Length: 157
Image 1 (spheres, rainbow, N blue to C red):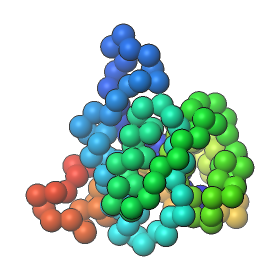
Image 2 (image 1 turned 180 degrees about the vertical axis):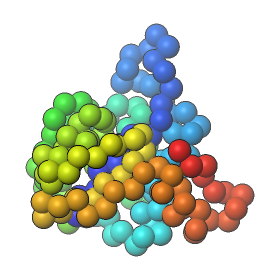
Image 3 (image 1 turned 90 degrees about the vertical axis):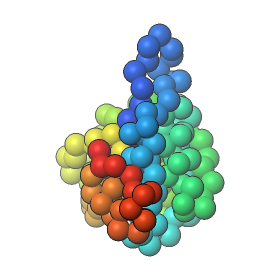
C-alpha cells in the first residue's frame, strides 16, 4: 500500500520563500497524530519519502519518529503532479509519501478515480487502483489519542 500524507499546517510565508515555511504548533500536533495513528493501526512502513520543502519534510520527520523510520527526501514530491507508484518503486510494499496539495489529491484521483479533500495532515492509503483508507486530521488525532496518555494527546485539526 502507498500512503499519501499531505503536509500539516504551516505558518504563512511572511516574506520568506514558500519552500521555507515551518509548521505551526497545530501542524506539529497533526504530524505527531499521523505517526501515532499509523503505529496504532500497525502499518508496517518500509520507507518514507518526503518533499524537501520544510513543511513537508518536518511533517515526515515528526510523523516517522514514533515509527522509528528514517525520512528520505524526494525532489519529485516538491510540487507538481507525481505518480505515487513510480516514486515509491524500489522502496518496499508499504511506503509513506509526504507531499503537497493539490498534488496529493490529484495523485489519489489518478491512481484510484476517488475524489478526496486532502486537508492539511490528512492521510490516504491506496493500492491496486483503489482508495482503501482515508483519514482526516481529526480522525488521526482520535486514533493517536487511543494509544497515548492524556497529557501527551495531540489536539484535533
